[in-house]
Image (tube, rainbow, N blue to C red; front, side, top):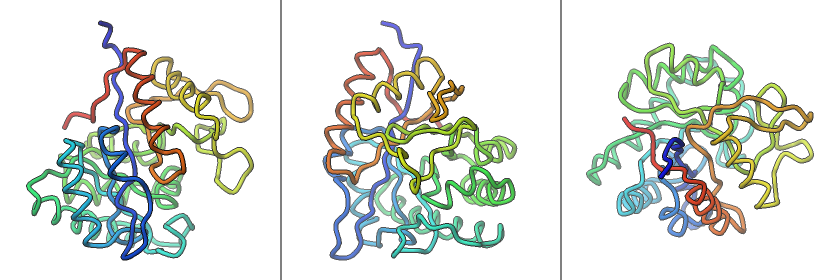
Length: 256
């Protein structure tokens, strides 16, 4: 069997809050290899965090902190004018919160992946990227930092000596500079499942993605983000998993 290709399937989970339910966590967990768990700022709450950690451990899924802006109303997807110092503090705070639940449940923190606007801003703002990477390094230098493939965030992590995972997206389109098409623009999301799956296969096996401008962009795919809150999220995750397996791609979380 040809096992030259290995990739992680990650999903943002634990995004329910109080009596509000979001996502398909229980159905998604058996299909992914790592979970990014909301830490209470953009989504999630203490009880949801504990429950999600426990469920992920039951499925032997790698546990990651998913820190975001303190913006429940905007789901952490609105840009905020914060300083690098403030970014450092909010990331340390949220890693600490999730780490407490992971320790209480007998698990180990595997990775950190910023959420939403914080993630996208850190992809192109070196000062913000460096602050986030430093926060991860000072709290848990042994974990993996997930960031947009080729971005300022993974570069900042690598500069500090952190393990990094270059992340690609199954259901998002790309610009010719390697960034994601902003959600506010047309065609930011890929709604055709077969098209999204084929984009993933090409990124993993060929290291290329077709940008909106019609040009091929080189890309590194260590981990693939699957969104767990869409109407067809579970079927889509199953399709991607089955297709990659058929393509002889090994599915596993990055090794610590």
